[in-house]
Length: 169
Image (cartoon, rainbow, N blue to C red; front, side, top):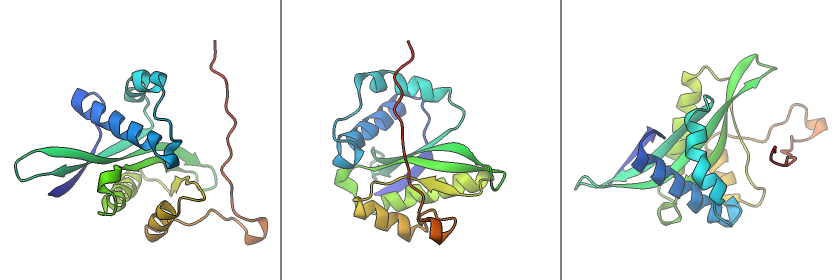
């Protein structure tokens, strides 16, 4: 089987369903929250991302000799901006490898796709967030060249925080 990585086309029904199913698979994993995507996300996400200009995503497929293809991973990235560098950046928001296909270099290939996309966009850096106890992902990110964000060692490592906002009515 050959691994293929291609930009995701969310206007293509079968591709967008495969992408959504992989994202739901990740959301059901303890590292993705353990609950799966909400019905709201499942019914709105593809449509919303189709028009979101800062979205850059890819699907990983295993292609068999008989021509069949199995979706096995995805990466979702969003453009941002570095005020210190005065250049765009690319944030990796999700990296998903289906549990049945982990340990085969699929995550590494998806990260390489994101790095090339960032270079093509003229980005100054890639960023991502990872749960502190996800040692497998942390090791993979370190092998890919990622390191904690530190401006001054005396100030410590940057932390990722969030504040949830209620839906507008």
